[in-house]
Image (cartoon, rainbow, N blue to C red):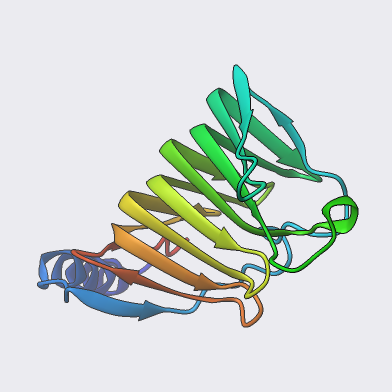
Length: 167
């Protein structure tokens, strides 16, 4: 590679790294279907399970591992809330709430945050608290990450840091 091109690349990288980062920035992310919870069974392992008889919610606590297909979710607490109005024997999960150091991993992506709210009905995912998203060689981090799984787009908010590999 000619020395001029290498120098230009290094200069651009230095400017990008030194430029102030906006408090909010749009990010187009191709999630595909990897983070969608649907289709196959959801298997959950935890230290304890509590069922709220009033709401029917299931609360898994302690070293929670939820696996569905190729996706794995780790957290200290996972709460499953069911859709309203369904019969008890045919209830579907409407929302999944995770807290206590949440990690979601697929073959191509990994996300870490303090808390996550996943709406299966709306196909949205919202992560809060020291969010780190890795997709391939690229990394995004911020305080809040809101994802539209249907559209495959997301918005990272709050002192966003982005590392994009150019090779």
